[in-house]
Length: 236
Image (cartoon, rainbow, N blue to C red):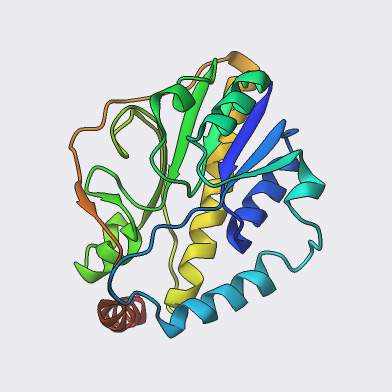
């Protein structure tokens, strides 16, 4: 089964690729280098703490790079002609998408078995960016989930494959949440790949609701999220 991963060059995405490659050979990894920039302040100190935590915890036993895991190529956008041409030549059975922008139709239709997206949140309520943070901001803690769904022409609206709740503890901190989500992404992806490899089929259901689209969370609201998150876990 030929698998291509579309992602970005970040610590948690490297961990994800590493863990996948322990169970399944990756045919190629495409790294998207463009990063949309909002016209307001979004950076928050907790994000540097998050990066350090992920480096120390997720990659504690790994010193390689994407290139040590599979044929790795960089593109400004995975939708650009050079990327589409390269993907077509690979003719993948499965495309896994983790953290890149909205895919053009020629890309998500390329996979012969499935093109699957990992969404940190519940797309039936929170589509788009910073979904976990928006759920926390709205004190919607039951929606701290990780979802794996098919990709279609819209954003985060494809048929749902698997979903799992993130398990928080009283000592959990917000800077740890993305690592927890990434570990859930690995588990859901391995479950899906095993099913596709063994029987060539995945369970799926139509999403029951089209969630509201959210963009970047402003930095000031992240202060609010930290307080609400800490208060919530203190009562667990």
